[in-house]
Length: 69
Image 1 (cartoon, rainbow, N blue to C red):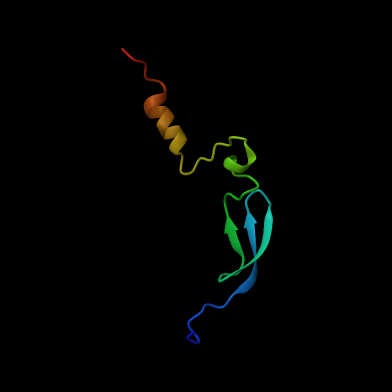
Image 2: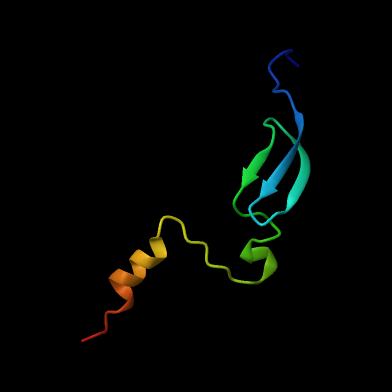
């Protein structure tokens, strides 16, 4: 193995918006995420609408009120 080509690993904490904290090792310190396994709908079975930049409102405004003629 070549020396000095591998990144340095740190003990870090991954923090989610929901408040969940995961202790692990990574190449970056103090990682913050928006969705983790504790609040992701795939793992929880609960659907939670995650709206970023008003996309849902724009879609509903554009397509939500139209009816077929």
